[in-house]
Length: 250
Image (cartoon, rainbow, N blue to C red):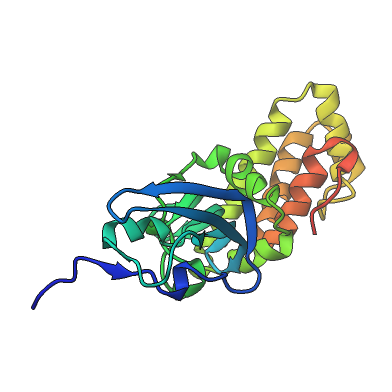
């Protein structure tokens, strides 16, 4: 069977992209010596947002399309046309049964909307980052929430792999709170404990000021974290670590 050495551009690369795409920047000119023409190429983009079990991603789909200087009938080598394949730069948080929580920031090899929900998306990214459990909440979860996701989105994410994903989030939140409070001056820690008296069930202001405050706080904190859903973890971390309670992310 003879392999075709050239492909016609066709309407896909010479027409306008589907709705929801907007032009990015100005068209660029590119000289194609073999074909003896100067192409005018426009980059288009549309937002991509994925909220599903094991995946919180925000990014875009980019397409490059000829907008001038090229008739549909022009034949070009397939390797040249490959530069017009859609690209999907994205960032966010993924769950992998093997790698656990993974922060991704880079290009995805394919449209995330077309990948079945049961598929692990981690292999689709080259730029992926695992963090130590004690750093996971700040470098993965808080970083992802700063991209515009909510505690409710994190609830959806955490349903992956039964309780494995949720338990990893619980561990990360617990370590973050303990580490944060452990770095405070004793007087500042006492104030944090007093604030916790209105947050942690079974932990009173008397407990906060008593001789066993550290032990009682640790016990009640572990109970609260162990029972919390993902969105509750966000509010708990915010309330116990941000000045004057901060603003919970709903």
